[in-house]
Length: 199
Image (cartoon, rainbow, N blue to C red):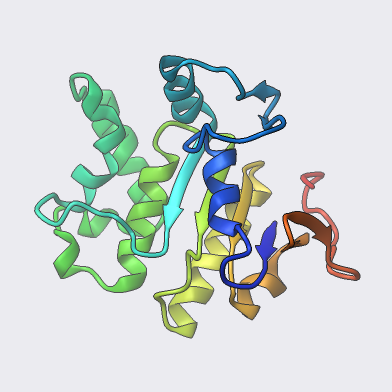
């Protein structure tokens, strides 16, 4: 699903609300059957760890860590087990970067950095992937590769919600919503058939 809208329309704020990062709002926010309003910090952290993964335009990788160490970041709140490292390597393989697991971000291309960021976002097994301009810093060919990865993840049952200004991302989305004056409006004619029963 893509969310489009002019700059300043509140697209990033919407992602923050859905991800439980912004707690100052009126009304209700419900994600995956979890009502976020009134949750204490610990419950919100648990929600973020189990329900959502975040992918940002600027990657937010730690420069002095290798690709596999960046993917392992969500595990660093406790001891990093052999099982956690195995999962990180599995996810790097899933995004086509296992051979570059020891490289630091400076030795990776923009598209490779974004794929590391996606692998990191998938580490905790989220139900929803929230993406803020995920192809915004990528050239056309690299961006297309990221979009194809999102389509594969969607076919496997993951909900992918991307805020975007880019036509290629909008065109690939099964559903497009426009954020205008604080309201989400369905883009007419934008809905595409679901894949494998996933909306």
